[in-house]
Length: 219
Image (cartoon, rainbow, N blue to C red; front, side, top):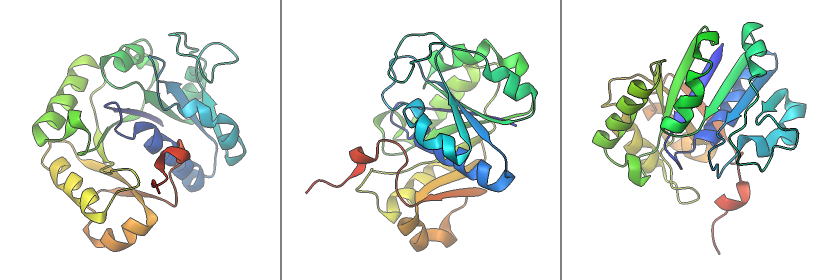
């Protein structure tokens, strides 16, 4: 299965991608691949986690050059298409907005069966209302040759996240036309709201996977 993930800048898209990969490996008992297509001035890169994720059964692919961890150049290897053709679990981590969708358009005919998720966070300026969320999803569907199939609730304020933030973001997302497929939530918060989470799937984590040092409370 191919999983495509997009989201506005700062939505927590890459954090979701890493946790989704970990969940797929655990459930399906086979390796998964993250393809880092966020090559247009990326800030949080899934490929920075490549060495740490490899022993866990997750391969991270990115730019066409061997030393690609910190590169911002728009050069991409499409070697991951062979993994899709072989029926492996592949997650495409797109750049937010049309820049990421243009890369997707170059290979969409080879993707086959897929899920296309949009990660939404009510507490980012670009998606802080239902109307803005709807506009972003509509823009994604318009620019992409593959329509979105579901939404992800990642309503958080980093280390300041409270249970109410997750539920407030959920209420907004549930007003959209697409199904809420996933909620990404830290374990201590999820324990307090488990019965109120409405998504089909929940990804629960102990600590953030991506750029952990950015999420430590200030003292």
